[in-house]
Length: 267
Image (cartoon, rainbow, N blue to C red):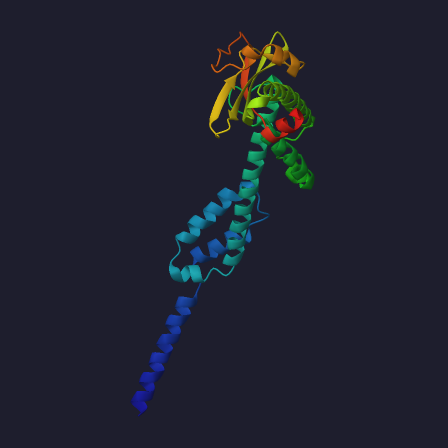
């Protein structure tokens, strides 16, 4: 019986010794804990510091990882950095839109298809978002008076283009009144020549059977060209063949027009 008790005590002591050894923090564990403890406010520049902690933690054994008592702080820091990266991505997207608006307004025209109305809407949304940012956040977004000036210039340009397109549609509706055609789309190539802005229009219409057809203007409209003038030159402004629109213009650019707005103005 005595031998049995001795064996049990030996086993217990061995177990306690092993547990004691197992529960002792290694220098590697202490080093990781110290790195986490030294973390300050998380900024976008904290990425390298967190990556170093991640690497040191990954090198620990499973038992050593379990002994890192402040790991929750590290987890929170990584979440904060992820949120900041999302914010900065949003800032980058806002700045890219701002650059597009200012560049476009500086030339008045785009060499690619551009939805001016959508770009103006995005610009105005940025101005509203900017008001909600903190002073620190505002330094990352390039909102200046130049943006507001560019938005006004583009808005005025779109407005004048829509009014000019409305005159083109008015002329079409008058000339083809008996045909009962329906305008399905209006297109505009905006040009700059001799410091004057011009519009070259085309439109798609549906006949009584719902079949679509295209008509093209083989002459340019200025902002002041009326529906009456277009009607008087209908053979030039409503051709079934598209013309060469080079016209020796300095800039050419397609402008996406909002059909609903143009049709309202054409009434």
